[in-house]
Length: 286
Image (cartoon, rainbow, N blue to C red; front, side, top):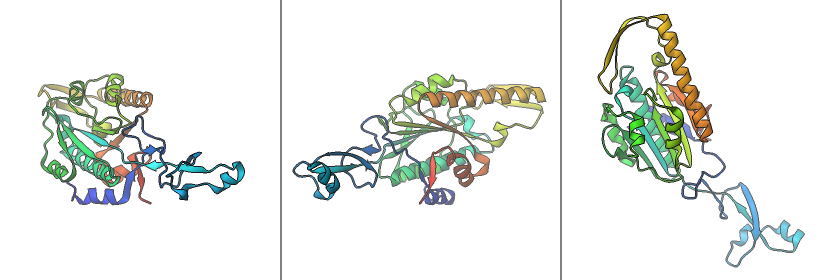
């Protein structure tokens, strides 16, 4: 999927909008404290033998009669883990949700690779541990099916994902499974330097508009329910969905994470521009 035209356009147009401040923890920090080549000034320290004399601040020497080194922020490459929900519910919307979610996972991995750090995509299905894809291996997602019967909550609870410590952690899921947002988000944030939760849903899932007789099937358990969907039922569904999204937003805020809902029907290009860019996940290539 690295060669997918939509993915290629996204990678050419966007870059990860990483924070200027360091990620939590030493191993995954983005901003170092050594005298680097970045133009962003950080602090002074006294000159020591062996320091690069090009970093001497002569104006400080004139004021203090001491040789001082100007320290700048050194840009480091973050480690990136992307957890892609591959359970059956991701097949909704005639496969569009799964297709665009895979495109987004690959695009985000490629953008992370551009920074020079390792990027791995984990497909969270019934495999234990989840399959890890990186580099040219991302092409395998082209033929990957979302038939997992374990929900993302179960995968996370089993601690099956070998997260890289203090790195950038991205989770792609519809989050449409029974869970309490607080404990789930806290577990996902544990040990992460930065956490992004990206909810991928179809327009119909966000605002269903088809009342009448329907058979609802749980793709993870094959359980089904026959019912008549009335306007009242739709209103209750939208209320519960709104509560879920607000719960995830609140839990993400408490964990110092970002939660954003994306509508896959719009396509990858529009999703990046209208959903991820305003929430500070992506920024245009300068």
